[in-house]
Length: 53
Length: 223
Image 1 (tube, chains in turn purple, brown):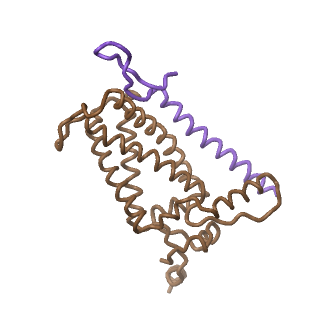
Image 2 (cartoon, rainbow over the protein chains, first blue to last red):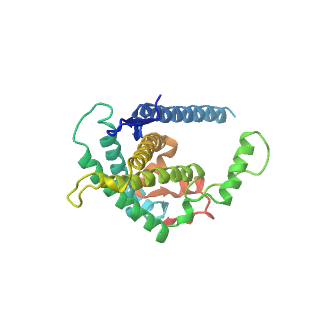
Image 3 (cartoon, each protein chain N blue to C red):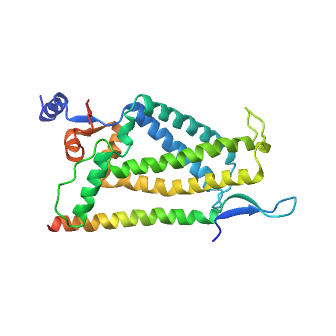
């Protein structure tokens, strides 16, 4: 998995950094989905425990 | 007078609502939301395969967002209670008590928050860092495009400097997607509807105020 995007320099030599890798986009979406699912699950469990008490 | 009219009249007579957001702040919130969603759509739809002329809408919306953020900062510092959004000693004390309670220890019951609770303050701090990074780098990136107001001049910075500006803009924009997803999720949760409603109508009920907030830490208006 690449973190950055590079382009080849027109003058030769090393590659030029041009930005963040868009391959990471899905991981940021996944992080949001995981955070939401985790919060929803914890809330559901704690409210069930509170109801029982 | 019918029962409905009597109820309506009684409801009007008793001030049972507390103002949470003024109209100007609600308008700011929804304009910012429209700008952020437009910017995310114009940035990422072409990347995932929906090709269209995105640049014009993207930079003009970016300039609008920059202006909104500037207005918000001035309002927050001069007219709003700036410290209401900052984590204070009472938040830390309550956080510690919540942690002790969660670990099953007995002790003092944690107090209620003021206008904003700690997760809201942390979320605001995160959004502020991301949006300010995006605005700062985005304004610099305007130097790379021709607009009706200025001609492009990409030579003010070296290639590697531009590279890092694009890196910061890109990472902050992708992190903003995560934050927006969570924001929408919390806004849709039934236990947070009072806050969502207050962002449309401005108020929460007196009962909600007393259940969720500490009067000593947030003096709300009766309106």
